[in-house]
Amino acid sequence: MSEGDGGNPYQTMSQSEIDAMRNSGGITGMMGNVLNVTTRMADNAALAAAQDAHGQMRLDPDGMDKLAQFFSDEAQAMQDRLVDVQDLASVNPPGSDPVSSQAADVYGQVASGGGSGYLENYKMLIQYFSKTAEKMRDSAKQARTDDQDSAESFRGGNVEA
Image 1 (cartoon, rainbow, N blue to C red):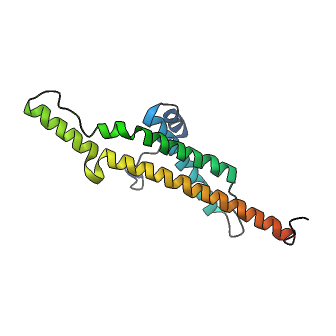
Image 2 (cartoon, rainbow, N blue to C red; image 1 turned 120 degrees about the horizontal axis):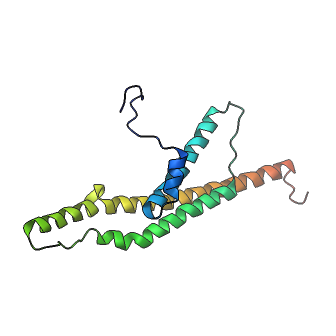
Image 3 (cartoon, one colour; image 1 turned 90 degrees about the horizontal axis):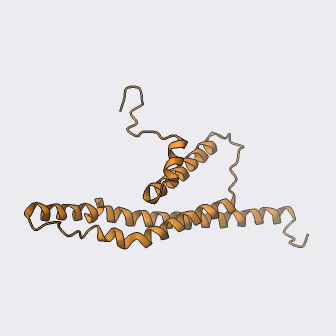
């Protein structure tokens, strides 16, 4: 932390840095997409908070469906790679000496070591992405229902108007 930064221990990233990550392959590209989505969500939340009491926020159900599909696809891709990640937990030592054996044990512990291990966090991220997709689909469905209810109320409940 530097003086005058308000105590924020995190480095900010510019949109160009996030875009560069998104254009990378593998986990870096996926994390770039996550950063992009969360940044846009934070911007939308700030906009909603800045509106006065008479303001409103409109959800685009089709956009929500697309975003939900992104999270579903990423969760599935991560699920497909789960076997490879699990293999990280059982690395054979490169040699038969004690240092090689200990190094392989430590590497396996980092990969699978309980709640702080890579494997457990990877599984939690898959679950988080899946739940996020589900919640977004539910929100889009609710927005469509609300829109339909509002339209019907203007027609006096008569669908054939």
